[in-house]
Image (cartoon, rainbow, N blue to C red; front, side, top):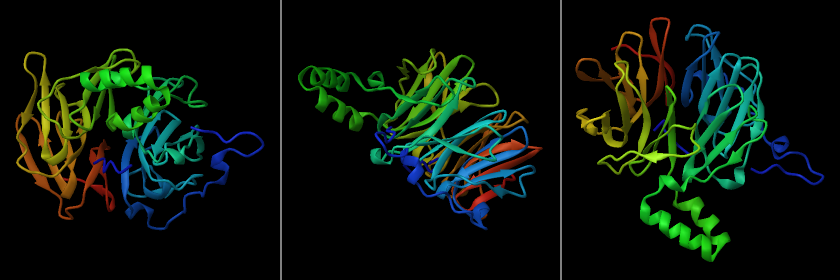
Length: 326
């Protein structure tokens, strides 16, 4: 789901909270562990996953695990040349300035019991991270500080009216309710000057000001979406639970594409050969070009994400790194 599994600094005479955390264990078989995201770097590839695993590779075959100060599961990673950020459980954000070889904690809030699901930077200083129950964080200083933003405009009108009335009556109860009524935010995608968001309960939305305000996109589906991205042919796609795949056009809005299976779709991957791959649970792979076709890996393990790399497709799965063939 990307198997999409799920601020405070301690002050006043005590060390920062992350000083008391347990570093990720360097595991000989980390390459074969649950890995949730993969991205290309200036030097090759980076993959992140369970127990704080961060792996680097120059060729997709040999992987080296890196030292990470926290052992919480990492769900997503983003890369800007030598700068990298990864997010995960316990509202964790870690960052690297040297191409992923060393990492520092920028944000960690285990008391929230909310995972962050995705992170995206517009430039070296400005970025956002999203997660469960509407968790939305923004930085304007490269991650040195992160501020939380409530985005009630992503709720339906009835919920917005309810929250506005509640805020007038009881500010504390409003803050508590806000943290439980907002849907899970699962994935971000930056296309041109527009930012897209996919989440649970049929949530698809876009922003033209880097996520400071959102507009919902109507879709006839109320299940979770796990990705929204641009296909190789330029069309906008959204993928989610039970094999649901939608395509968008300006005239008709969102319309479903029949995939022929019921396993959840986790990530949309635009490949260099003008083909789009949508990866899913149980090893299902949806290939989209002029037509749509369906294949399944021999292992039948969940595929969480993939990238095109040196003419190959490198994927991360519940059983580690794999190469994908059509």
